[in-house]
Structures are given as structure tokens and as C-alpha cells.
Length: 227
Image (cartoon, rainbow, N blue to C red; front, side):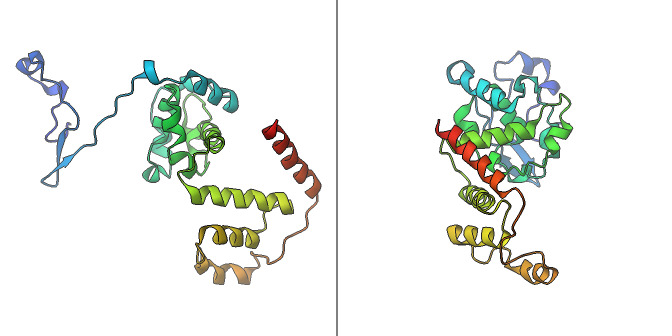
């Protein structure tokens, strides 16, 4: 059933269909709780002039996924627990990748807020690993120097630095590093009384087997990055 106040093409009369003004233009007006609410204007993308095919191939090569298989069923967006916080839903990100919209995709907040829960991957009827595509886009954004969510990037950097130094994450050190860099001193402070008595948060880093091998992984990565 069409929303009140929006002209629905499937319900037009013959005279309306013959009129050049028959089709509604956006933004249109809808009625919600008796008040007019303006719908955000749809953005038109001119693919012929803005499509970056090199970007499409780069995403496919790094992710190992064929993004052209996505037919916009919307299952990924419907199952994503972070959709309400995204500036661009997952399904639209996939469509923008298909159209080679590099700047729009790499500048969005969504790829940084993705928790990699893999709900999108599980729900995809074409078996596209959407979560991996999102992860690849986040790495590409980092390399391009795009950082719309600086606190998320700071947490990731602090986490990796802790793993590089100790072989595994040192939780107390991670928290100290993150809080110092972001100024969020009281972040999750309310959890301390629940965590500390259970011994879940150590004040000294743990020694692990294979610390040297972990360090070598970072060294190989840095060598490839700088080559």
C-alpha cells in the first residue's frame, strides 16, 4: 500500500499516466502522524563518467569475491546489527562498489563500524563473503588516508601494537593506550568492579609460546607494505 501523500505509479489513472508530470519527483512528501515529512532526495550517479573500474578489480582481487554477483536482495542489510548506525547500508555499499564509486565507499563511516560478525556473509544467497569485502574496503581506506571514525582506527592501532609487542593482546595496556590517545579516560570504567574480582583483567602482560613468530608476521607485513 502506498504511503499517504506519495503518488504511486501503479495506482495512476489513465489521464495521469498520459501526463508528462505523472511520475513523482523526489523529494516527495509523505504524511507521518499528521505531519508532512520530507523524504531525502535520491542521488543520481552517472556511472559512465564516475566509474573507477580499477577500484572494482582491486576490491575483487583483494577479497577474492565477485561483487557483480550481488543482485541487491537486501538480506545483508536486513541482518546487519549495525545498520541503524551506518551512513550507508551494506547492500548499498556493495552496489556502489559495483559502480566503481571509490571516493564514496572509502569515505563512508560504515566500513569502520562493521563488527565483522559475518551475518551478511551467512545470509547472502549468492555466497558472497560480504564481511571480507567490508574488511578489504577498510584496509583500502587506511592506505588512502581516509579516517571518518578516528576512535575506531585508534583502537585498532592500539590493539595491533599490543599484539606486536606481547604476542597477544595485553588488555590493561590496550585500555591505557586507547584512553591516552582519545582522552576517553572513563571508558567502560563501570565494568571494572565486575571484571577485576574474576581475574579477567591482568595488570601485567602474559608470556606466550610463539611470540617470536608473531613478531615475524608483523615484520613480513611491513616489508611487503614498504616494497
